[in-house]
Image 1 (cartoon, rainbow, N blue to C red):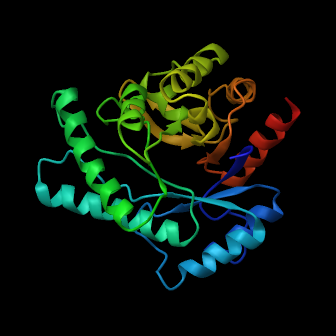
Image 2: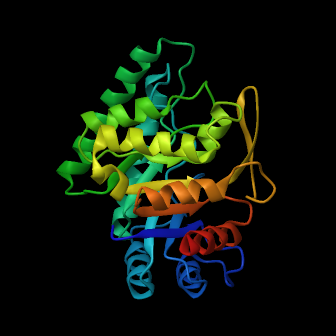
Length: 276
């Protein structure tokens, strides 16, 4: 990536009609550069439709990312659920790739009260299977386990960075609001944001900072972590300090707004970032 692009998690609310293709062109009309295909309940684009989506993105010069379904647990105690989780990630990666997508992100799973190292091994093995299958299909989309917002969920920054070091075609999806919520209000200053970026650079090199897929949103949280998303102005997330850190570290890639007002906050971030 040559720069940092801001975009929306799904079709902008102000898009009319609210179709994927119209959403892509509307993203460009808003002056934004990216859109995340939201497969959070199901993969809602068919193989037949995907080439139209790819064409629309190319014509509008919009980078596409994808969020796989929420119903994923690569550490389930039930083999059938692991198999279904692998399939959901593969289906998302296949359709996103046909759409010209850059990256597919997902929540990897839950600890299920188990030892974290054992969970890491299980999730790594299942990710290996996913990567191997995609490689055999000549699908080189970036596979991105996401940093998660609750202590019960697998996916602290060290786990995600270790997976990225050890597996081909795996890189982090960094959700800064999740860091903030997972630690019950920490990771909310320029210094702490910089600490995260320093860790990424140390573990993955400059390419780690130049190939970022991020989520930025306000968030409500409690002792157990994430509750729900908020707009940036409604939340206590110091997003201006985050954007300053991203600028100072010369971060490139895609920053997706998951706010209740997806395009409003994406445009706010882009405006603030451009003035830094």
